[in-house]
Length: 344
Image (cartoon, rainbow, N blue to C red; front, side, top):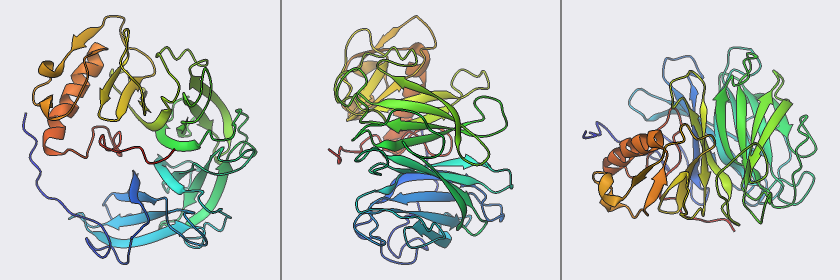
């Protein structure tokens, strides 16, 4: 099946309707759909720019982009240390905006809300990380906020120095059925089972953005059965969608340096892996370069993966022939598969 691109619009410094310079900001490091924030019938987006220098070096920021039907920017609103009504202290190199996730309406006011990762926040320990739940106004400014970290927001997980909690984020919908959207949070530097193997926290939110409970997934927690090695960094990127059609989101977890082994629950594409938190079937299927039409353009290793993931990955592979920097999944996608490691 051929994928035909109807139109491409570039949004960059003084392009695509964006006003101003984005030099050195890492604009586009993260993306999330917000739904129709301003009520004009067009979907709006949040774009992370983790190296914005508002108030200090690399403190970070997030742009709310109000879009036109043709994909250009109608209006923009920056949220940062010094803009957009955020009004909270950020430190140098905090990198607010390293990831973002549209949550839907958390506080029940009918306006979409936003989660923002701050991978190098120092609550509790150096670079332990944090997440801000931002309650938005229709104009993209912040009307309220709640921080989730080692010391705030009702979160009782054990975060250590270098965990970088908040580096990966994805909405889960109302996972526990209480009417409030929930959130998965990656901590790629977590050391359960070994150095920097990573972890993911499935967090259940209250209406005020605090945490009512959580489940950790790691090498030693949550019945996570993937074979992890040191520096795999699971949780570096996250996504969630209904794979098996049961009406509940499945969680897809990125692993930065996962290598191939047997048995395996991942497909490695360039520098990323896609690992399933919960295998769907005990039956495995082997694939190779020749088994995925057109996939020869991308270096992949021989792998044994779960059958449904193989089917889904084939779909992604075909799509990537014409859209090499995009991935499947509602709203945000998995991340650009060709992203290179930039953070130590």
